[in-house]
Image (cartoon, rainbow, N blue to C red; front, side):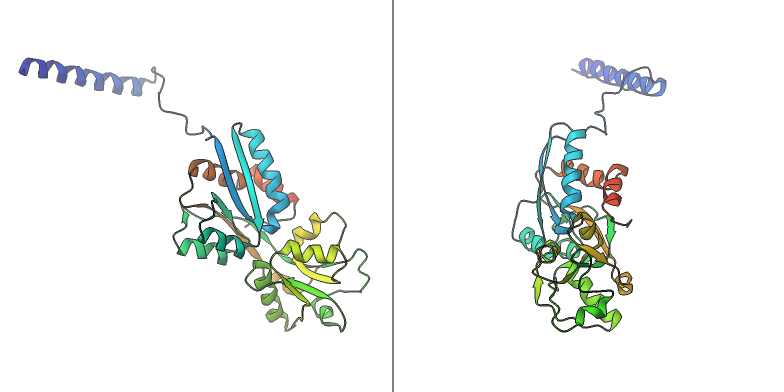
Length: 263
């Protein structure tokens, strides 16, 4: 029995020695899987409404460059998406239009890993093409009879609206407060409102259906967009890979073309 043990021990020692030699000499190919191998499968990304156009493009680009993957999106106001995730909605990735709503999930232990920022955005006044109401600054939105729409306070664009009001000393009286910035934009596009506070990227993405009016106080409310992997995701590796792609040079290029700023 002791002889058998000695033989086995000797064989193991030889194997260790050979492994060490091959690692030092580099003559034996490594059997470790490539760290750059892309996971396959499907993920669902919950993303702020203001990201709809850019993330749709990024999703298509990601799938094209990563065969075997499928990226599905759910777009809505960040606060609504947070509520859905808190209630168990099957999300793999969450991209918020502000840090405040992301913090709600990190504080609840519903995000795994970090929540790096990938973009910034600022408010702009959306008006009908040609600006028929002659709106040139935030104060003009208080004119009697003007139909103005904004986002509701819990939504990032609504929180930003409150910040610019405080910074400028202007108090708005919107005829409606919407649950997403795309709803605000839609009301201006359709003529249901004369003006609305949306993001620069929303105006740019409207392809001429609205014009944008800059105002000084917008610089006081720059929104930073973070992204994170939702805890319990059944495809965490793929979710992390997509998150990294959004922050890659390819993702940055799409975001900049849409008007988003650097984080």
